[in-house]
Length: 291
Image 1: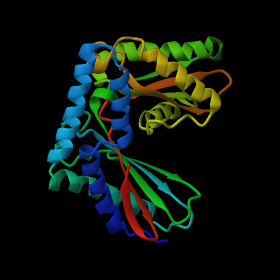
Image 2: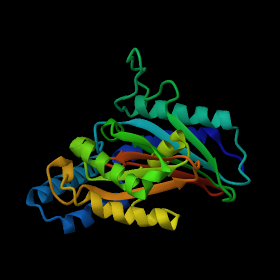
Image 3: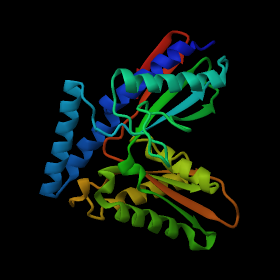
């Protein structure tokens, strides 16, 4: 199956706008679950305000949050798909630029030294584009994640040693959630990467933070830590927007990688309550959009 690059450009544009305006159903379900179990009256009010903001934004076609974030595109190319990799990335970049200029959206992307803003949501190495491969026949998927700075600024890495054990991993995650407090606009999804190298570990944490609610780590030991940490962070009392309560996080998600015998890196990356994402899937019958 050959991919139409003009369709990729159009999809990249549409995905950015969709992600900023429509909250995925699993996140809305997460709000419902937290609201049902929240015991603090102030927290109940804060959660209700968040839910109202989401409804009003979607009903009026406005953005869920003014922060359009750093645009991230995750591409998975299936077997039998014909596409020029370089041209694919260029098409995604053009779509990202078009979304920002044509919609229009506030560009949050600047040069790291001069702080110059090109007002395209693009710059050096941005949008961030990850490419992976699967055995799914004649299918190419693009996931778009706009990652806001409030959550991204609360990113942490520890190069733990094996002798510290699993307890050191759990303590580090809990300490990170406490340190972040209300700065991540909780309730959050706490993404945890364990293992690999330092760069892989941080990438795993980002992948975990942007996973769908209700999904589980594919490794049984990782899934067990997810359950334990999800319960632990919601006993910290941080609460929605850091104002106290039981609803600090929708969930803690964990992703693992094998690592070196003499190290055990752990990273934390958080997603804010407006956990935005959108997907486009290219197949023989055309393009379908979802979450």
